[in-house]
Length: 129
Image (cartoon, rainbow, N blue to C red; front, side, top):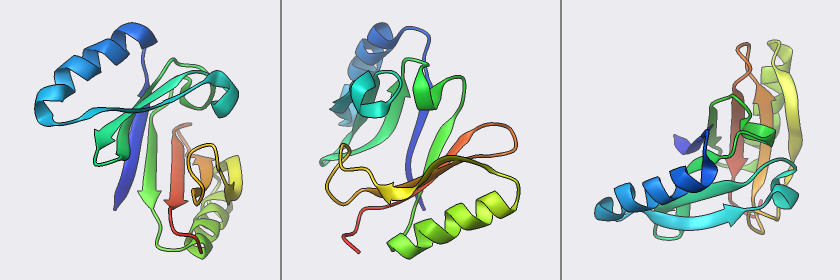
């Protein structure tokens, strides 16, 4: 199951306003904004519903620089670890070892790899175990 997707945009502020207006009729709103200090790269905005951001845009810096990002939902943290190990064994490149990312939320446990085309692929578990 998919957890969230994200991609870079050429004009972050304009795109953020664009998606706020375009998605509002669908019941989707801006739920999160992350600073470059939080992401280790650029600014990001997350849109979604019911407190869950599942559609992200970024200013093209850091983790979204020129790449598509997709995150797959994992049932438990051990599945995130197994995803990372299997992806690296198949030639993926590490883009963030498995671990907690509390700047997203308390139980956010994720791992990131770059696929053969350089896209940022993630597995994430939101459970506390």
